[in-house]
Length: 133
Length: 217
Image 1 (tube, each protein chain N blue to C red):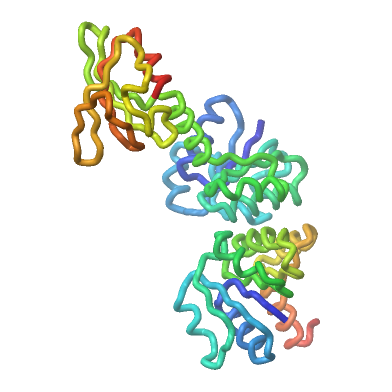
Image 2 (cartoon, one colour):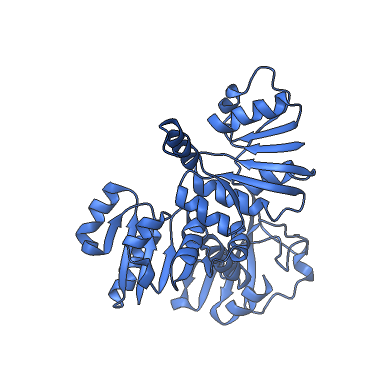
């Protein structure tokens, strides 16, 4: 698979490392060069410095057929805007956005944006841990 | 009308003040506490603290009975989400977004924002209009009670006289070029002088010929 990840933070970097280890073709974009320190030394993918909100940085990354674009910056609204713009790109098969606000994550699913909500996932895990499900 | 404005920066603040002065009911939502404290002296109950893209904050502001919701923050991503959330969750607000980067205007329209306003684009259009109208002609000196003027014009790339020699121009009667500033150089023009873009041209012109000269440049 060819995977593009926007935002090399805690989640984005671990995801990038894992997908790279599994021999997928990975491209990571972050506006801060230092963010790439989070990537493993063995990481074979591309590291690109650029602001994901600026179309000029994102478009070249999505010119090639892309199986999944993950939008994983730490700001919900930024992720939602980038994701909605990328969904209009025919080269991208699937767009997944990280949205921390549980209500927002649900709302955008209604709008057809695939969202993953870390808050919901942690809560679900915690409830499981204490046997509450 | 009841109008909710998210973002109490320069745009939101002045818009809110104007709308209130026109008798509308206004609620400003601002996430910076010190800004809210300062502005509450002026806006009293019409300003509240909070993240305007959060559903519960909009609900508290009474978004369900709002006629219009204006997203006026300095961040396009916030303005987009504010308008989309307002449309999805609440009953009938018309949504208007401030677009900081004019390139986002088209994206916003495609994503269900009712109207977007780009200050950059508006100002740009106005300047273009002014340039086209030749209004960049700056009066330097007025003589004979305003009947004769010395004016300065910077030639744009699209000016009609660029790449042309003075002897080939039909200069309006009652006007004459007296100097051309090209970078550091000062040229006293004559028939063979050819104009270049960005030349600053100084002309002496009778009031009655001013419009004709403007049109020629």
